[in-house]
Length: 265
Length: 263
Image (cartoon, rainbow over all chains, first blue to last red; front, side):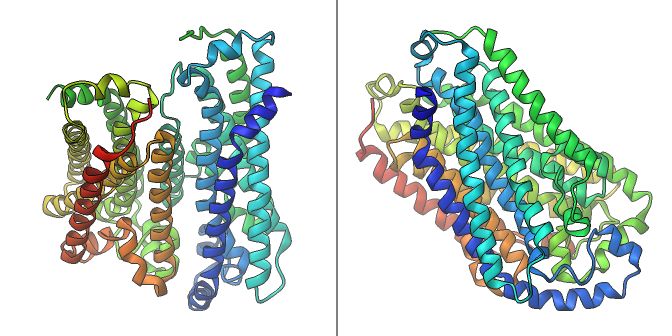
């Protein structure tokens, strides 16, 4: 419990900063919504002329793209990237900082099994991520209600918001596993950024090429927002994949860190 | 010279990882493209979409049926990778001495602070150029594999990429030169990079905020215009890149020798 509280205190400022920037970004994006909506009138006119098969291929229907939820399905991807950077850096940093800060021997000689240390740390960063996601969803929801001309389409909106949280959880555990496995990560943020953007680029190029099989490689595509917009549901196979990745990463983190040789400095 | 060589050696491994990443990315997308190019009708629907929607899918006036058009779609992602590399490298190379508690060791050596700054900046510049050349080689190899000769277009795209890399490298250096906390320096560099990247996407979606293009280097050199319409690099943005780089480097040069080093 002490350790949990200590970690929370360490990440308080960092988390507040992330919450503020994510909310600011959300306000900025939704501020652009009226301009986007007036553009999409023309788009949906053109789209109506296409056969239904083409509309299906793009995963969107003419009357949905101009709504707030349609707009949200598009912009949420970029917030997911930001949230993923935060989560990966948290998961990685919470373990890596003991070795880089030369405090590993201090911490691990305490009368606590390593698994308990890991649990406390994981719980702390999980709390940070959850708080961030809650604040972010509250901000987007209020902005969406403020700018939406019509009634909000609740189910897909909340599913996408939840997807933001799930993507954060996946990346939190990926970062956690990396932090546990890689012996010494000196600078956490650069590694976190390249990991997240690597997955993001894979997902985007896969969807530009229409390669749905490649979606399994990118956590950003496990909760494909255009599909959520269309069906108001997650796709079971990708959701299972997401759960599997999360579980494997946590297990790998515990298995490796529990018996790893950690050098005292 | 010793510091320069040491920094090169210290960052060689991460450079190799970056090169492998780029190579893998280009090879994989090329592989997928070869499957698609055999069925051009599947690509045609992209080009018939209206502008706003094309931005959503990341295509513009690019002819997907040509390898060069497909390459134009990949280019922004290559720039993104190179920018992450450059900004993080610039921030870390200068601030890592304090992070690793080796600052005392380095800065008590008979070398001036500005001398150290120059050596580290030169090493970072060399690494950034090396990554650029690697991406260049991959790009030419990829487009040529489909029998297209657009070396001149790729050369100007790579020149544009190098300019963007320079901007982000100097941004990273300036952050590390000003802040005496290594974490803050890297954080600010990363934050500015993320913010400008998302701003460039916002501009693409919403044409009415075009005036913000000056704020994001990712919008300076648009592959759609350069590949699609055969335009050159916009001279105003070239000048802007050099201006930002010079200003940030000068700022770093002025502030770094004067600031406290945490030991």
